[in-house]
Length: 353
Image 1 (tube, rainbow, N blue to C red):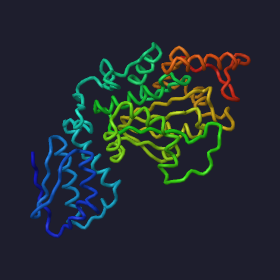
Image 2 (cartoon, one colour; image 1 turned 45 degrees about the vertical axis):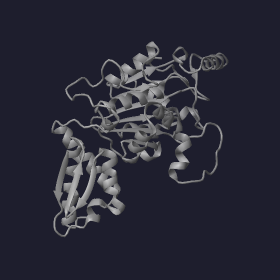
Image 3 (cartoon, rainbow, N blue to C red; image 1 turned 60 degrees about the horizontal axis):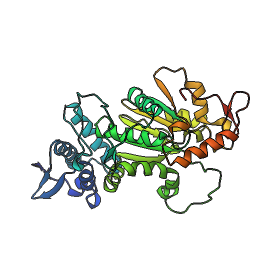
Image 4 (cartoon, rainbow, N blue to C red; image 1 turned 90 degrees about the horizontal axis):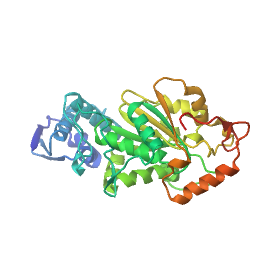
C-alpha cells in the first residue's frame, strides 16, 4: 500500500527528514515503512496500521517545517511524536505492534491481557514456570501493578520478569520495556572504566541483556533499543521521569538505598507495571542494613495492591550445582535470634517466601 503527502511550499526537506535522513530512519526502524520523496511529494509504502501512524507523524513534521517550527529538531522529540501517534492509533481502535514484522502479533484489544501461557519462546519451547512458587510469581505479575520477587540466585526472578515484560509487549499491553539496575560493585572495586556512558554501565546491566537475548533475536533487540521500545539504564537515570504504559523492571534491588527505592517506585505512570527483583542475602552496600529492598518489605507489606512473591532454594532452576552451593552457604549462615542474615544486617523472612 502506498500513501502520498504533498510537501507544503517553502518547507525544507531536511526539516522534515532530519539531518542525514535521521527521522526517516527512525520511522523505518520503529514502524517498518519505506519513505521517499520526489517531485514535491513524500511517498510512504508499507502495511496498515503502521502506514497510518507514519502518515500522522509526517503530516506533523511537514506542517512544522512549513511554519518554520523547530520543535522536532531533536531525536527525542521525533520519538515522542512517533509514540504519540501510535497511542492515538490505539485509542482509535487500530491494533499496532512493534514486532509484527518479525512474525509477532498483537492480541486483540478486547482479549484478556495475559492468556494461558507466556507468548515467549526459547529454543522453540515456551517460557513457563518450573515450580509452584514461580507460578505464584507469574500470577502476581499478571494480577498486580507492583510486584516484588525475592529469592536466592538461580530461582528465575529476573528471567521470568523479563519474559513477562516481553509477553506484555507482544500482546500490545505496553509500549515500552525499561530494565534498570543499581551500579553497585559486588565486593570489588573496578576503578575507572574507559569508554562512553553505555560502555561504562554495560557490565552492570549485562545480566538483563543476557535474559533479553534469550527471548529475542539480535536485530530485534538492536532495533528496539535504537527506537526506545526497550531501554536499559542505570537506576540513577530514572530520577525525574514519569513512565506511562511501560513495564519497568528493577533488578538487584537489594543494592538500592531507601531513597533510591522510593524514587524508583514513584516513577510509575498510568497503565504501567513495576517488577522489583532481589536477593536479601546478597547485599553489596557498605551498610547492608540500609538496603532499600529490605526496607520496602517492612514499609510496604501492608499497602494494598502490592504483591510480595517469595522464592527459595527449591525454586532454583540453574545448574544443579547452584542449589547445592546455596544450600551449603545457608547451613553455615546461621540466623541469629530468629532473624536472617543479609550480608551484615538482618531481616525477617520475606512475605510469601
